[in-house]
Each structure stands twice: as structure tokens, then as C-alpha cells.
Amino acid sequence: SKASVEHSEPHIRSAIKPLPGLRIRWLGTFGYEISDAQTTILIDPFISRPKHTELLKPILIDTIAVQRYLFSTIDLDKLAAILVTHCHYDHLEDVPYILAQYPNATNRPLVVGDTNTSRIIHGYQNDSGIDWVDRKVGLEESHIHVLDLDKNNPMVEIGTFGRFSITAFKGQHPSYDYIPWRGPKGAITYKPPYNFWDYKLYNKQSIGYLVETNGLRIYFSDSPFVINPALIGEVDILIQTITTR
Image (cartoon, rainbow, N blue to C red):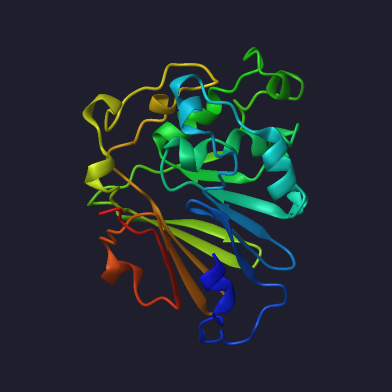
């Protein structure tokens, strides 16, 4: 916005040693890129922005927009992981197209998300009738770290990617966005292109991600509810969504 342009950047405590090329870039909605000179991590990369009228029919990935605003600005060879907070279309829709840029499944970035995230992605198979899928390779073999966090298992260490280490934490999706007919949990049996209501919220969850690099701790929470603050611990940067009411 104009206001954000006119105001100076906030003072943020430096890490132990500044990392060359370290940056956090907002992609819109809750989409972020965090990268350094060697490794890139994406959180909820959503570029397509379908209009409300387009949500009345199966929604299509805007491949031109993804190419223009994402692929032209990152090195896909350095993309190590895609972190998905939850399975709604405005967080997950573009992830399959990103994965399809890697014809060899072993070279694809790791995807981290819930059970329904895995179901949506694996639905993009060679016989989908979608040209950018069939022309390259289906996504059945994509490597997805499936999380099913609960009160007995609220935290999972995902791993280290270059100089970034990632830990996932159980979060709660705002209840006002939960509509019973979408289902808190259930099998996704449809084929792409999906309708917006096919992107079912899994078990009312929104996964939070702690990204650490060289002593700097950054927490991404696509929920106004951070339900495990003591477990997460102190962070240097909190990137959090806001509630609408």
C-alpha cells in the first residue's frame, strides 16, 4: 500500500551473523518466500487469484501469472520445500503447477501439509486431461510429508534444508471459516480441476511453521490463534494472519 511505502522498515534485531541474500517476500494472501543465496522455501504460494465469479465452476490455475510473478523471480533448482498451512484453495491451488515443473519426481521440492493437501496434489495424474500435467508427468510420486497433528503430537521437526531448519506446530483454523458441509475431515475423491469446496479443511487445523536460520527464529502462523506459544518459544519475527472480525 501507499502507507507501507512511505514508512520506514521496522528495526529487527540482527541474527548472530547476517546471512548473504536472506530475504522474506510476501506473495499475497498468506504466501511467502524465504530464501538466501542457496536455498528457497515457499509457504502457501498462491498467485492465481480467481475472481469470485470463477468460484462457481471448477477453478483453474493461472499458469501465466505463476510464471510471471513466481517462476521469473526464483531459481527453481534452489527450491527445497513448500510448506502448506492448510488445504483451502487460496493456499494450495498453485502448488501442483509448481511441482509439475519437475518432470523427474525425485528432483521436486518436499511438500509439507495435512492429509487433504496430499490428496489434492496426488489427484493430478497423467490422465487428468490438463495439458500441463499430461504433457509432463503426473504428481502421484511427489514427496509429501503428511502431518496429522493433535494434542498428543503438537510438534514435528521437518528437517534441515540448506541453512534453514523447519519445525511444524499444530494450529487452529478460525472457526468462523468452518462450514459444516465442507467437512473437517474426509476423503477427497474428485479429480482436478477442483471446485473451491473440494479443498476441504482437515480437522479444523492450520499448521504453523517455525523457520530457523543462523540464530534467527521466524514463525509463520496462518491463524490468529497461536495455541502452542510455550512450545514454540521466543521468536524474532512473527508473521501472522489477522482475523476478519
